Length: 388
Image 1 (cartoon, rainbow, N blue to C red):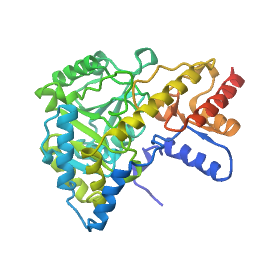
Image 2 (cartoon, rainbow, N blue to C red):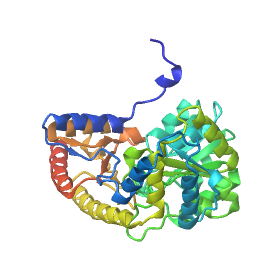
Image 3 (cartoon, one colour):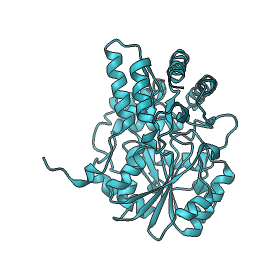
């Protein structure tokens, strides 16, 4: 069957493929230590589930507005003002089927063929693929471990051309866990304003930060950058609601109207009763967020110490999210070969860095229990020692 050319330009998700392979092996009775999924291992907090159940019982099972339930859009606008210093009205917010969907809708609504999107690498693997699907051009800026996987204002300025439409900023980052400092955010904002481009700030991990690190939302710096900023976020990571498929986009009204129109002809509204769970997530106790953050902090410390004690592996210590991105170049293997060998010989599942534009690295998620971390790091060490 002949398929559209755009489909052939897009690579399948390696994260989902490896996670699926690990699950299949586990179903066969194999003892798998999986560090592949970008998903909290906690259950969704009880009060959030209760709110969705109450909405079901109240008959919140019908079609809703394509842009989202008004009460949820209001709650998101309040959250952005209170937590991030961003003054959006509810009509400047659209609720989407997950954070990924918010970014896809944005790129489809914004780009014309041939327009460029600047993406720092290592990057979340879906960014460049979304740009390709919109017939745009991903422009990759490579950051190194020496710079803590963060780009400089000079690199951003140099990458901007007359075709540049958008800069994607992800802090805290998937896959590196790095967080730009407030001063670094301000310096990048100066370039965005100077060059008069747009920036989308993917803040899905904003609540998962460690050791006194501060998250600054780029649009809060001043009016000029606010007018050029779009916020993408959601409920998956901070509230352990990955399967709920709830995200949102906030930005200039014309853009939000365009995204709503696009959504009205693709998915229509997000699951109605699930949105009431999201309202509870934002408006009720945040203790659950802190409890999960503390657990991630403990796991981060243990995994980082065990991993960096392995000869041949180097890794900056992450400031946020729940990932480590060690360099494996001293093993002599590229990331796909490394990950296949590790899974087959030691039954440890990790993600090859080539998926993130970093073929000399692998990504490990510590969104799993401590026993798995300790056992998996022992197996990883055995595999690495066999290579070097």
